[in-house]
Amino acid sequence: MRDNHSNNCAGLITPARLSCFGVSGSSILATMVSLINLLALLLSETKRVLTVIISAGVFSACWLRNLISRLVGKEPPGRCVVLYYHAVTVEHKSRFERQMDDLLRFAEPTTAARRSPLGSGKHYAVVTFDDAYQNIVVNALPALQTRRIPASVFVVPDMLGRTTHLSDTSTSSSDDRKVMAIEDLQSLSSDWVTIGSHSLTHPYLTTLSPKEALHELTESRRVLEEALHRPVGLFCFPYGACSEELFRLCRHVGYDRVFTTIPQFAFSDSSEFVTGRVRVDPTDWRLEFRLKLLGAYRWLPLAWGIKRRILGRPDENLAGQPIALHK
Image 1 (cartoon, helix red, strand yellow):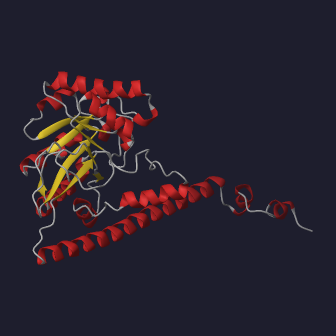
Image 2 (tube, one colour):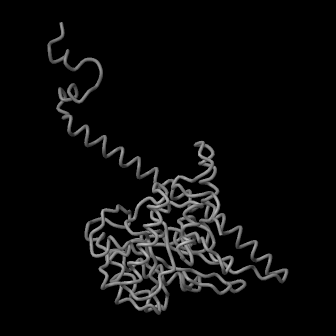
Image 3 (cartoon, helix red, strand yellow):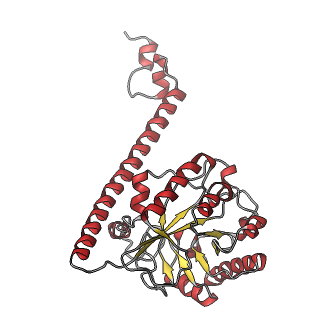
């Protein structure tokens, strides 16, 4: 006959029953959490590697096409990519500087407010920062100024001088999420740093009523212009959430250009109003950054469109953005 100890250990394996063998429930839970985190990391890195591989193929195909064009005496059109960062922490300062060296090697820097046509056969790049974290004043802007690379900083006025609640992969502590004070913005030279609006409070604009969205667009611009004593003509959408109606509102209130988070070539038309951008981080692999810089990630909207159709959401992407940019 079995004793009580054996009976307690019979049947399904549970934390309570495994404790019969000296295994605690807490250690099981900790192990399961570790395994789940490991699987999530592996899945994320697998997706990242696959994205780099596909992007490398896109770049190779375009390079070959441009080579053939030049061989037959036809210069390919000028191209521009707008990059956007969030934070640049002190730990990643040297990696950011190396990325800027790569930018100078493979592209010609230009501004987010550019209106002149792109030169044939040239590749341009724009550097922008969202949320105006204080660490970019120390860890990013000096490197740009030394290299004569212009920058644009998109600001949320209600967050100035505070530690934001926003969560981002480029930040790891509350110190990383400290936002510039208004004095920091005022100290930036308008000759090489353009200030743009990032809304008043950083909401999902697509979830607001037209009246509320209009308030976010107009008040953020008014506060910045009064504080800086210079026009604010650029806007970028918080979380990348935008719509045709929001584009119309931005035009109505007088913005010169607005930016999304859709990775596409920029400024193909000098009068372009809606411009796409590609997300970059100082922690990007070197090849990954170079491919983004050269526009090789522009296939992603197509992949997002396929995913939308599979999920039965053909009219918008997963960030609430329209399929096509309105110009």
